[in-house]
Length: 56
Image 1 (cartoon, rainbow, N blue to C red):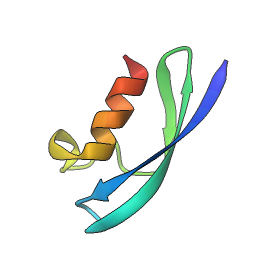
Image 2: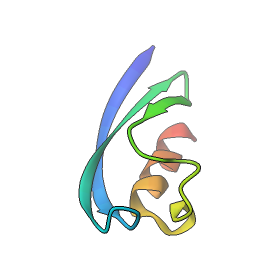
Image 3: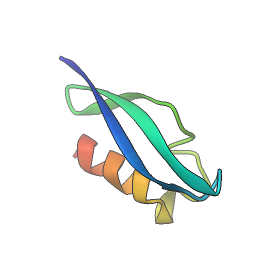
Image 4: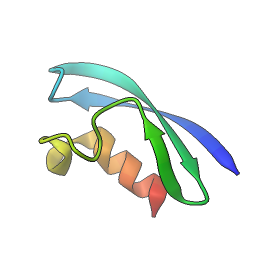
């Protein structure tokens, strides 16, 4: 079942707070409207951390 989740936090790539939509299906990320997981700031990104919790 597909689930859309909205996550907010600080984005270092954009240097501002933003809302990210993440779509998961059966525990796997199918879509995110940010550069996750390829963003160079992903290891220290609060939004990426929230996405990782969604898919675990």
